[in-house]
Amino acid sequence: MLSLKDFGVVGRTYRNINRYRQILTILFKYGFGNIIGALKIDQYLEIGLKMISRAKPERVEKLTQPQRVRLLFEELGPTFIKFGQILSTRPDLIPLNYIFELEKLQDNVPQFSFEDVQKILTDQFGSKEKPFATMDEKPFASASIGQVHMATLDNGEKVAVKIQRPGIRKQVTVDLEIMNHMATLMERHIEDLSFFRPIKIVEEFASTLERELDYTLEASNIQRVSHQFTFDSTIYVPKVYLERTTEAILTMEFIQGIKISQVERLDEEGMNRRILTRQGADLILKQVFEYGFFHADLHPGNLFALPGNVLGLVDFGMMGFMDRQAREIFIDLIASVVSQNSSAACRYLLEITECDEEPNMRILERDLSNFIGQYLTKQLKYINMGRLLKDLLKITVNHKLRLFPDTFLMMKSFAAVEGVAHKLDPDFDMVGHAAPFIKKKKIERFSAKRISEDLSRVSIESLQFLQEVPRESLAIIRQVRRGKFVLGFEIQKLEKILASHYHSNHKLSVSIIISALIIASSLLLSFKVPPQLFGVSILGMSGIAGAILLGLWLFVRPQK
Image (cartoon, rainbow, N blue to C red; front, side):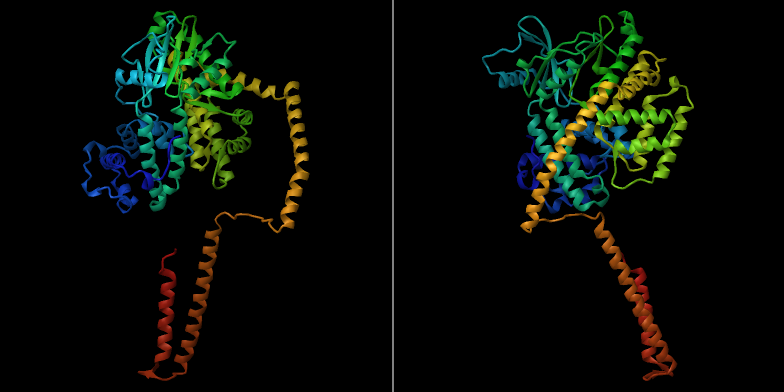
């Protein structure tokens, strides 16, 4: 398991401190020195901040903050590149302008040597076993976590072998400890950044990265998708070789096809681009709305055209999941948009998002109504689904609604497929192609089979509930008899309410004292109560002065 222990407790080795200095140097380079200062790192670690270079290239000044963050991640290496790629799928964690910029992240990571590859193979399979008859020394693909080599089995079959970068787990563990330490300091010292819950972001990243570093999980994903298309000859999923797969090595069938982005070559080989386009659209529609388990990284590099206009898929590291209820709510959202029912669209949008505070429903409904009017005045073939989903995403951000991660992945997958489709067939109408499929899924809910399944499920759940009620009731009664029954509740923002109540009462009390001083001082001045100065009561004047000072203090003192 990847460690997220506190850096201050376990991380003060030379290696970790050296890496911490390297990270801080690059942060200074891209103009984030103000954040380093606010974190007060030197109070917690003897890291020599004064010795760290603060040099900043001129070109950095001209870049936006999201652009600087992207370049920063690219320079910090594999862990941070993967961190940025994962963040680009999480609009619930970071602002939208950062999402769009981090989508451009490049894996500019050097390839590792073939000697390292051989050592990893020996570590994983033992020195006596030779898992592959031959293997190309030069990889044909590489990324932040690993690289892919072509190899052959003893029977002559060609396979693609994905091999994890040597020492990646140690490097990731060190980087995660440093990231967790910095996230803790952010929440402690920078109020504006604490809103984004940096500790939660690092924790979720560690969990996601743990899964991506286990290639047996990707092998399982391949098998699951293969099962989806067992009886569909238009989609091809490579075979996975489990006996030659470990946490650090993934062996799968090598697909000899044409990258879907190589349009000229597709034409040269006589491929039908229109058929390939429709098969790509059917692929994502089936995966999302029928199976609920879908490929979440459908960029052109992961799609291949095979003989017979068959569409081949690779790279199953990033997958999305949507349960039946989430799929049906999204279908209802689309249907409400098509029928121009902004009230229903508003209701369904709230069901696929989460929020800290209830949005202003009237303004949200108005924005959705404008959104619907903007798109439904166009013919379907002129609607860009990618742009449509992006505009819908902006509405959620403006109203501080957070899309669930898998819902966003689904939206990105639709946009990616449409982008590929427009390169292959510029006249392809993604929305029009999806409409009959979505209508069919909506009608299926009222089929006899579905109604029977729902009634059966509700009956079983009701029976289980009735069985649990007496048991739970007896448990509560026992707690009451023992005097251990505690009713717990939480009032959100109670501290702020109490603080506001305290300040109001305090102001009222001081105002009463000021009024009393003014009235008493006025009487003293009227009756010229001694002692006097130039015929004016000194006590009366002192009282008036005190009332003025109290009034000034009341209205200019800082609020806590």
